[in-house]
Amino acid sequence: MAMAIFSSSQKWRGPDQGLQLFGSCSQTRGPQARKAEQLYGKRFPAYASWKASVNRDDVARAYRFYRFRTGKLKILDEKNFGEAVFVYAAVRRGLRSQ
Image (cartoon, rainbow, N blue to C red; front, side, top):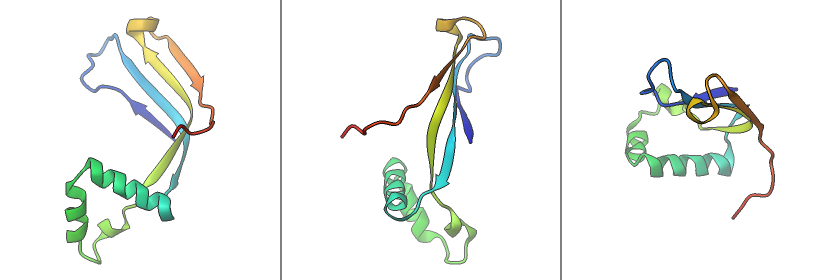
């Protein structure tokens, strides 16, 4: 899977900035899904009341949370690196900081 992150307010013909992330994605389950829903509800407080209002047979009940794990990224920062210069980086998995 891949995703792009950039400001949509950038003007065409730069200097542009953005990231492309490449990795894998999977549906969360069990404790990981509950944690994702909790964090989403914290970020968007209206989520809990919306979810409670959704009818049992509504297709929205099938919505799920997913985890994206970045494996590599591509950086475009024309202001700092020059026009059309891409910087690539691999993401190493290590110990999590607590």
